[in-house]
Length: 217
Image 1 (spheres, rainbow, N blue to C red):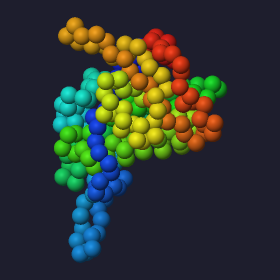
Image 2: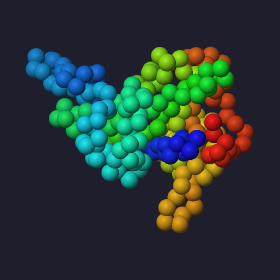
Image 3: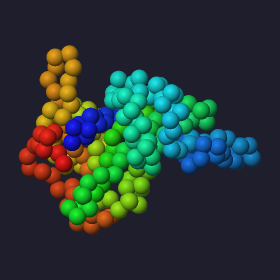
Image 4: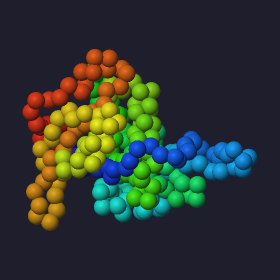
């Protein structure tokens, strides 16, 4: 669980879904009413080359960043959970990074959102919601019972965004985020959304008491 505590995903907020087109191939385009071709936003697998192009996203103060080996670990073990959005001009707009983990026997097999971030200039296009939807679909195909994520208690903008996407607070994790500059550590919400395999939605029944990071399985 030491690695899990390092995965401090923090999500910048964005507004409702807007007028951006979506496609699954980086070379896709569409034809408008005048018959001319226009390129669309691409949602594609993250690659090693993208590590040299996503500074415009990671420079945002609300985005948790990691060392290169951490990203490479996710690319090696859970490549299907690492998705990037690319603008028609080739700029990276945002990305989501996650994994599958937990016990099937205890009905805890699930998708986990490690990091989700959208560059400031590309917010309010519904991009975060679309990336979350794709991770949820992958988790459904893998037979997950739920999707979960951690977010700072103080980041109410992100908390409210997740609630709009169907997530609820499952538990509070005390001092999950290590602070710097002598400030106190910050608590996190563990937020969850049940998937279709959890027919009784047992995975999202809130715990009545907080837990500590070492208590998280």
